[in-house]
Length: 414
Image 1 (tube, rainbow, N blue to C red):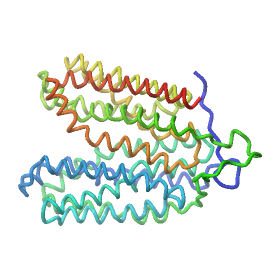
Image 2: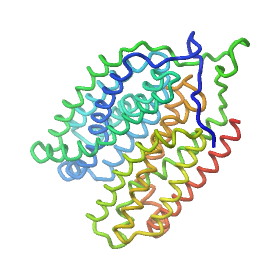
Image 3: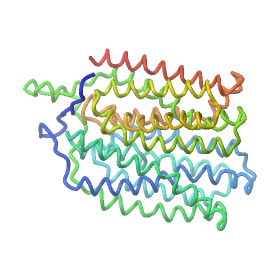
């Protein structure tokens, strides 16, 4: 395995790009806005869903469908959002996305009927595409320039802090729900989310050099290493491989509790195992920088997905005793934590920062769309196959296919 080297690309007039002055301040702000945006737009809903269904007599299946619609919308609109970031930078996009997010949460709070609830989640999905990981990753990648070490450290910091969103906002949402009801809770959370608007408007003012590459071929005089040869077939295969692996990763999280309770563990024990996986996720993100980032892009992606195969297959085989399950959940969480950073760096480490917003938008969008259906597909597979054991074995096989596709993608790129 060879050490990874940063790829230099020409997107403007300069041959190379140094990290933008003030990047540390941007990272600090994005850490705060990401934890708030994830907490309000994503993690509040699982806490509130049962209360919404009971209070409004709206079927739970339709509430979950509305949330799934938001995730799918986020994946689809993320492609356009990424292209806008390439053109004008993240400040305008993320500020507008934050404002739309506040409006969407207020609309959720005042939704008079289930159809309007769907409309509000549709708006929230658009806001997600402009505020969650994909635009933040594009911003940090563009402003990090050719400094791969600075880029990885910045991405790690953001994902580490944002990984605490459920830890902070799940109990906060439950506390607000007890005193305000679900509508009042969403209104209170919209006030918290409002803070992200001025933060994005003020902190993301760094000069932005367009990362969009011109459609015409580069001049003959341009050094080969700056041409950033883009292989569309290799990129398409990479997207397929990461989407397959991403589906397996998120389906494991969603379906772990029913897998374990189906084999005699209590709900509390299963929840403990799931929580241990969250700790593993933090460890995995800390592990990425000093260890995995030293490998070449294909080696680190392959190692991570092989970890998905191994841990998912192990959970399919062993669901007791609790101590063993916690170890397996911890290892699965570690792999999940590294997968987030593999996803964040997959494009830039192969093709440089040219069109980074657009290409990252496609990759993240594909993973978001397939993972949005993880709860339904997991339950459906369990019903068709007769058990969650078989479902996890199938998910491990799906991740194994992802390894093969990654291999083909690398051969195409070579």
